[in-house]
Image (cartoon, rainbow, N blue to C red; front, side, top):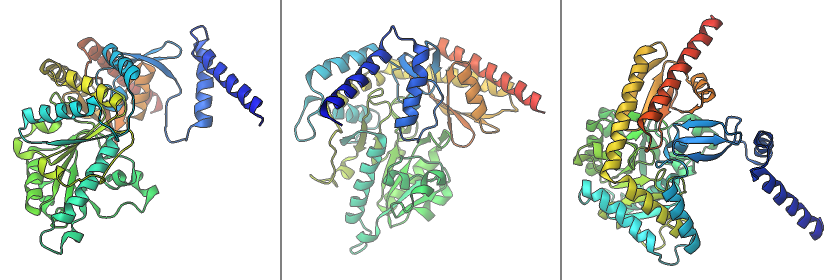
Length: 446
């Protein structure tokens, strides 16, 4: 293609983009074209409904057509402050005008400030728990950093001289989800995620979740780390018991292994406390903690928090990232977390979480043939159905409520942390309407 032809082609594409985003364009006509481009140009790795959202506000998403959805997925527990938060937008705009990226070749003001906030806010609840932070771009990357640190820990903390080469085992649990990179996938037990990509990273093994009696068998002198979600998200909103986490801590101390809490979904205010493990006793504290989803309210960032003894393992050159901890990401994170950790904010999460769970339990009582159980803490709630809830989720979407599944038969309820009573009541009404519609459909099929 001649240069002049390429220029004309690029100009035509720009013109298409301008027309597609012009307020005078017909939104309904733009939707099929957007979907066509998704199908033609994007890798086919997501099963998405056939509509396009182009803006959001608080707990709502809007289609190109103007149709409004109540979003109880929050971008999979990401948009803690809701969509298009005005303060977040202002901070982003200001920082974009000043400095976006430097790489980690140089210091900038915000990574140190944000790390200090995460460490000091955590230590205010559990004194001395964390000492250092490593910033990444995602939760998966934070977990990868934890695994690298743990493997190096094992090389220097074998039971006796000569054993170090053996101390490479990392124990994870059934129902866990830690990401889709090769290392994080190796720590994810669900076979449908793992099987197509074997062989995975060696020396990852799995123990049954929340079974105290199985701990000693699986965590041995060859174990360098144990990774667990105190409250599982993708696995179906499964809450670890106090005795289980306490026994994990004790066993890790016995074999000199690091205890890693993956709080990517359950942490940072989602349960009404800063971290999910703050619902448990101080005897359950971890050595490492990974966080990501809500840290910058939708902008990609992850964090690994390390205790003082664990942090000493990493030296200059042991790990790194080009984009992690950028001025833009950490400035946003600093703003978002400062708001989330306010006592009044966390109290509102607890209060609204209690209301939402109570109303879902009433729905469970009203529709016992469909719903088996409601479980969760704060605004991390799982509703266990008696059959796969695919059709129910579709019926809710048709009624303008967005939900997402977890585990085999669980509906995950993770609205923005700013959800209010009116929005909760609106969601519950749709739940009831959708269940009634589901019953009517099933009656006509019998």
